[in-house]
Picture: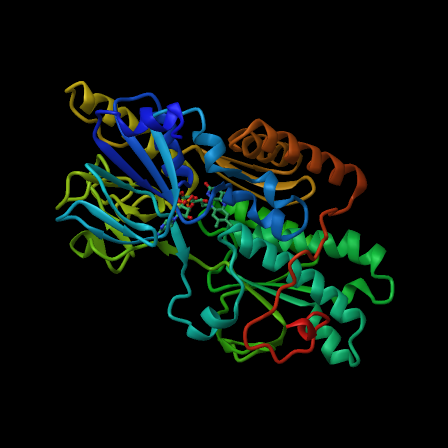
Length: 442
Ligand SMILES: Cc1cc2nc3c(=O)[nH]c(=O)nc-3n(C[C@H](O)[C@H](O)[C@H](O)COP(=O)(O)OP(=O)(O)OC[C@H]3O[C@@H](n4cnc5c(N)ncnc54)[C@H](O)[C@@H]3O)c2cc1C
């Protein structure tokens, strides 16, 4: 028997809006259109929203996966005009107004694409095959398992070279993700490894951060870059600037300066590109790997299709001629404006143009070590660290997530330990030649 809510949804006499992607932009739209005269269908290949800015804390065993993720069904449960389908969207057919997915075709009156981005390897095929990425919960859990497996492998390594290779962690890209990961791994070395892996010298664990730019956090102010590098070096991170990874395999990487690093673990945090699905080639800027949109986020050739967040490219804005930065605040603000515009549309009012309100940038390197740029102000240290925590906690989707994160941070602060160090799903590397404790299980 159909439930009342289901019958009510099916019979709604409203235009159908399909939202693809329940990330920052998509979720903002879904929440805003709840109760409005639209029949909304949220499609996402995951069954949960993921708070990506804290993924690195899942990867480094500070937070559990469920403290930064929230199931879509829980979010949309009370929204009578919103449905969710777990689906992978494979193509858009704008002529038929249909999205083709792995669960069948779905028709729309309006389509909102909020697909986010994918890792950009800048054509480095070798790294694409072997390096680890940090874009989803499952990738964060892979990194967590890999790091913990490497520490165990180091303990039982039969040669010094094998041990060193297991203990060399290389992070490529010194943007916020790379810097935050490097800082968190360095803290693990200083606390957990030094105290609990007593059979080896914690100094043998090396964290190498590589970037082709001449400073870390190149999109931050010079002062914040300098502070961040100082914090990283203080924690013992080997920061290598002006260098690039040009090749490698499962056991080593080759650098542009001719150097070679023996390592089992390379984490690629060097860049992202907009996620693109086939069918809208005329509106796709191939060089930027983003969809070109007007100031209302509509596609030029298809005014019934809107693109938001990381995969949207809005170039006719004086301050951002190469498009807005691919950050959560842009995605959220674009989602909020689109809701406002859909409400205006429903009552016959004109749409407004998007203007980005830049709220600043921040990155955390370790305990009481963070950098913040707000307008013309740049500062670091304890206040920046507290501000970083506050901003991230309030942005989490649910009250439960906020409480879990606060509790875990409080516990970690008092105990000096990353407590969620569980290898629940062992990470088996592709093409691995390296003997590891779990490789035998495959
Ligand atoms: C590790 C990391 C740290 C970050 N730190 C910060 C930070 O500190 N501050 C900040 O402002 N920004 C940060 N960002 C960037 C920020 O997370 C993104 O800018 C933001 O998530 C973009 O929002 P979005 O809605 O465009 O896409 P996303 O939030 O990425 O959501 C896209 C959604 O679309 C779904 N999807 C994609 N393709 C398909 C398909 N074909 N079919 C079905 N579903 C699909 C995905 O499953 C996902 O749920 C970080 C990003 C990462 C990866």
